[in-house]
Image (tube, rainbow, N blue to C red):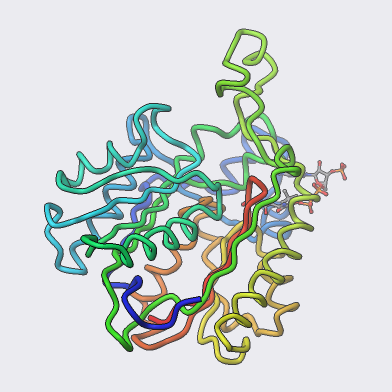
Length: 331
Ligand code: UT7
């Protein structure tokens, strides 16, 4: 737990989503689905999709540059880039290196974190640790995903869910009473890894003609099981984080949850005892952008002035790993 002190304070945010919009009606043209099913079962109306040649690093650099601009930080003065992604452009080097080059942040240390949809929150925790050690003053934490690159567009149970996008936040050192992380909770259960994974294409099972014929390089998900775990763990994790901050849900100005399914968000809100008017939802416009969803939401709530300086927000995420976590943050 950390209150005030020298940890991470928020100085700027940014987002970047591709211009191309894919609506539910577009899916009706090539798979057996309907706008009605997608809307009622997920809350998604449309999502963004990268154009040919537009990659995770491009989205990351766009969002990161906007966060730097808002904070008034020259890219050359940036100390660290932490990039969360489940869709790295290359397996080597990390996508953060490519985003660093695009942003012109040539003096920064750059590396990726891999914790699927929870990855951006894990990245913020890492940033907080860096800021408490010597010599690091400015850290950019980016969540960037080109989900369209790893989705099986013949599988109606997954392809309608995901979208491409990136969000970023620039953190500096907080003063004694400045904005900061008030508490966190994080947990992972690798025993459930195969509920949401890509069976082939990594070192354990490299891509072959056979794996490609089985479409094993694409995301596979046991939707119902992931759903149940998501509601349970996001609720539990949020409660632990609130308890560690010495707060209750009534002290939270806005919940900014991971956007995987409107029914998951509503289920978590109900369990936590918070009305939906204090829960931010943008899944209708972006679908599930994995680790980009919370920083995209954070940028929107700040830019739309739904919350201001001094507000207390609860962020909570759940995804592949299975990995999840929550953070109470004072803006
Ligand atoms: O961010 C990472 C974490 N991911 C999540 O949190 C996602 C969690 N899971 C979910 O959001 C939901 O489980 C889904 C949206 C994936 C599926 O919704 P569901 O209400 O759990 O549906 P289901 O899987 O139980 O499927 C119900 C029916 C099935 O048909 P039958 O077997 O009952 O005849 C599916 O084949 O709906 C069918 N179905 C579809 N129908 C039309 C599945 N996908 C579609 C589709 N269009 N796109």
